[in-house]
Image (cartoon, rainbow, N blue to C red):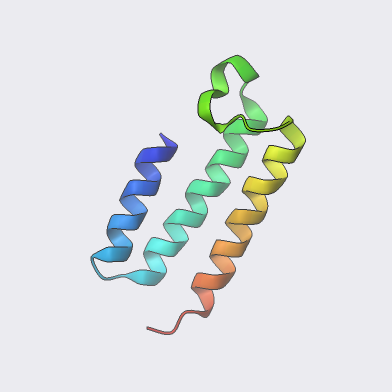
Length: 75
């Protein structure tokens, strides 16, 4: 699900609407944080990298950073 979200957001980025694609990418990262928080480790699959708290924090920070960067883009 997260891979599909990332692919769709990058497609939107490439096909013209940079800000919307960036916001979709940030939403995908936020979705990863929520999934990592909610799912047990055996169901979380490839989004398990470190301890749960660390993963949620990193995905959340990535989402905030992406949203901030793409809100500043002037294209």
